[in-house]
Image 1 (cartoon, one colour):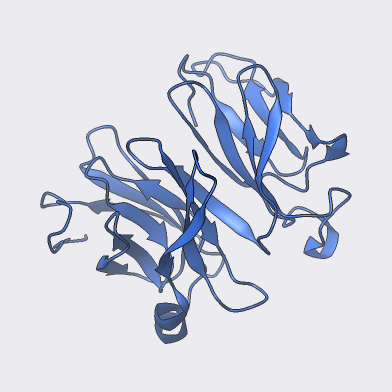
Image 2 (cartoon, helix red, strand yellow):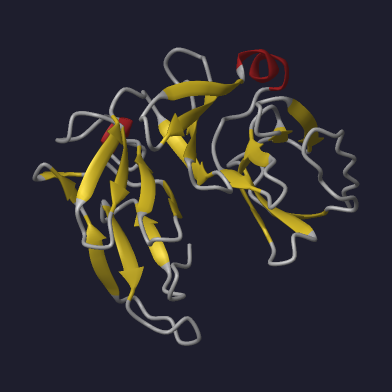
Amino acid sequence: MLDNESHLILCQHGERRIARLNAALSHPQSKFITLADTYDDKPFNSPNDLDIDRAGNIYFTDPPYGQPKTKTAEIGINGVFKVAPSGAVTMLIDSLDRPNGIALSLDQKYLYIKKMGVFDHKPKVLKLNLETKKISTLFDGRKISEEYGGDFDGIKVHSSGNIFFSGGGGILIVNPGGKLMARINFGNATNCAFDKDEKYLYVTGHLDNPKVFRIRLKNSINIGKSIKIQTH
């Protein structure tokens, strides 16, 4: 993701860190600056997904997928963390089996976190109040996952406030109240992103369907109203 100064910020699975590309985007090189690689002097597992707020704080998930046999490493948890511009690392959640996708609400008061449900088969989108630290369930994905399959992975927030995320055999869209608005069905997906004008949604496929898809969003996406999406 690009930060407020247009630096590319990355979750580096193998390096087990949050890093910044130390080169111009127009002339990229394999040079990186470490922003955070430990919590309480213990290395992260394998940072997976991130979002950045207007103040420059980085929020990220740290599941163990980059570890041998995907076992939790020295840190002992699969956490959700915040990295302040000063470099200070704060743990926000330490109780999830597999946190994955992460995104801020439009007002940046809430953090949406994907729980994959690898062990308990209870995939969810969680909602963390950043002021009170209270966690609630925004969307319970058990039923739709049982029906359509697919992992709960990446997540993005549209300018309408509606939330797009992988799961249920494609991309699911829920409103800020957690109501399922639509499902884009094209097989398992891993992550998604909008273009600048939100005319298109880009989706990465799963390992069993390793492609990148572009989906044109034909109609406006309004909170609380049904969504009609044509794909081609």
